[in-house]
Amino acid sequence: MAQTEFQFMPMNKGPKDRSAKCTVRRSVHLAALVSALATTGVVVLAQSEPVDPRVEGLTFLGEPVLASQVMAGQQLYADNCASCHGASLEGQPDWRRRLDTGRMPAPPHDDSGHTWHHSDRMLFQITKGGVGAVVPGYESDMPAFGEDLTDAEIAAILVYIKSTWPERQREFQAEVSANDTGG
Image 1 (cartoon, rainbow, N blue to C red):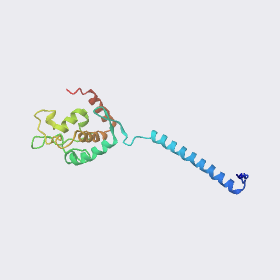
Image 2: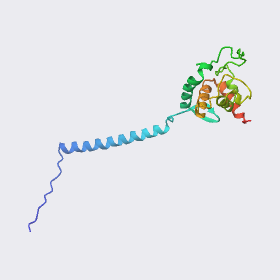
Image 3: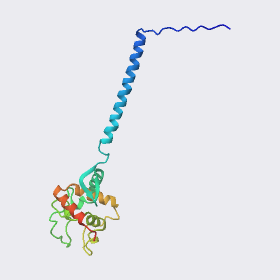
């Protein structure tokens, strides 16, 4: 049997090998950089605000309010309430003086009105069931929206209205809501 001879050749230390080593080093450095950037991205995402941030200082029925609720409420208000209460929540003219029908005009929902004097629960009941839901026998031009809007939509409208009030009215209304025992 013939013996095969293996010959070991010394590694070439020429320019081709240096180029290969540089390519390997660049690849290692690039991989480390990509890894560091990915880790930084994860940390930044973890520390960033949620996709739907809470509206600071605003609650409804004791729960935090999300920005998406305010935005939805603004559109729902425009579609369902603005025709009587005004696009800017200003109410009807002479809203404190009875109409010829004996009914009261639609009041403003901005800080010039009295909406912020009522609790979240009461505002929700009035919107869902009409004024008669909280004042039996009271006749009003405002319809009950419970058949046309979901509870979440009614809440969104009320959240939008509340979001327009200055801090003083928000704080007052929050205290009224906190003290509302539901009775």
